[in-house]
Image 1 (cartoon, rainbow, N blue to C red):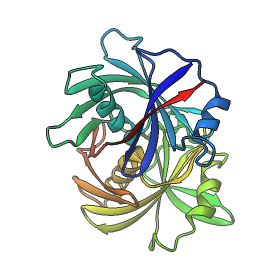
Image 2: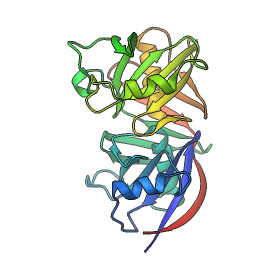
Image 3: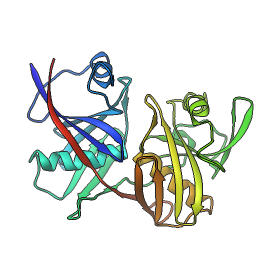
Image 4: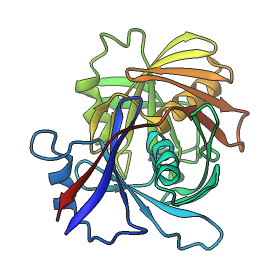
Length: 276
């Protein structure tokens, strides 16, 4: 059986995208790991799957699998590629698309300038919602990592994030601390570890170690989490430009209880078929 797919990226965060509305396939973690291999497979950070919705009030179901085969709740860069994909494949003619994910409902809007704006919903700070082990909700928490005490922000953007402020992003040992934070026992479902350097009150630089993937060129939900954490801490003001290795994302947030709006590009790289 030949399965059609599209290779896409959002600021270098790359994806294999499959339409399972007009096609049918059984996916397994082993198969996803084979496809994600950058030497022996297609190579990607995440696999994005378009499915019919289970909720009749929305347009599609959006599923996300990491390169290690694990399914995750949300992916912001993937959401922008998802919106571009369903339009390009004529699965919808709408410019505003309602999508269900494992992390909740999100709204995607394809703009005339080619940028995609995603309503990511309101961030969640309650430790049990992240999930994160803490006695009470706080703006920041001490976290013991490799004999050091890091001052971190913890929140959920539909998936768990830990944000650490650093002085010099270029020299910070992300490769060392990323996996340690990802697998820290206080994060029951592991966590995406973001490292942020402030530029001014409307700009910050960010590197993200994504759980199940490693460091990526960009992370949409990580950019949202970083902007929210910076605003909560009083360092940033909306709108915020988050500068990632792969490019820039614009994040807007009006405060607690309000949705986070993320805008950025989505790029199609090539079309292909794979035999399964």
